[in-house]
Length: 230
Image (cartoon, rainbow, N blue to C red; front, side, top):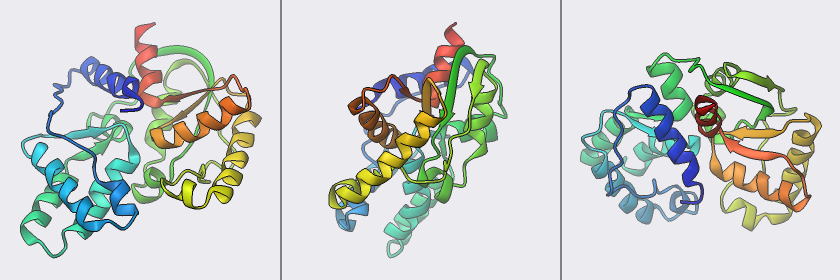
């Protein structure tokens, strides 16, 4: 909702790879905000609707590592006392893939022939790297783009400080973490900070803009999409 261009770019890249893409209108939030805040019953109601919306889908591709992790890791916990829904939740979990993971692991594509001239660095989001264990796939896709100069982000395993409601409940700690992250981003001299979770990019881009920094933030799918149009 906040970054529709990332979803559009995900669609464009998948179509470029001859993937038949649809967008079920009944789909809603994965339920992670409620789940993380302790509203388990509310999260379960939302999750059931999402499961129904994608019941007949072969693959579910998400431009969000955290949403993918919610479905794979937390849905089984959410429905542990509901065997019927648990079976459907596990089936859904086996079909959902983070965008870069799907390209590299399922489609076996690491080079799309994209071209884009820029110096970039990449932020490894917590849910994607820690829960899903996805670290190499986005980097392989980024490095394959002709004209890209990739610079590794110092302490790239560190959280950006957002963490959903954490940034509100622990604002001072969150701000200190963000300041450290921004300092590391600026130290790379990159033109663009890339990521695979839009909540992280929103948090970091907010900090960069408040400092008047010219560094852009962009989802990996957006960079690939631009590279395929040049």
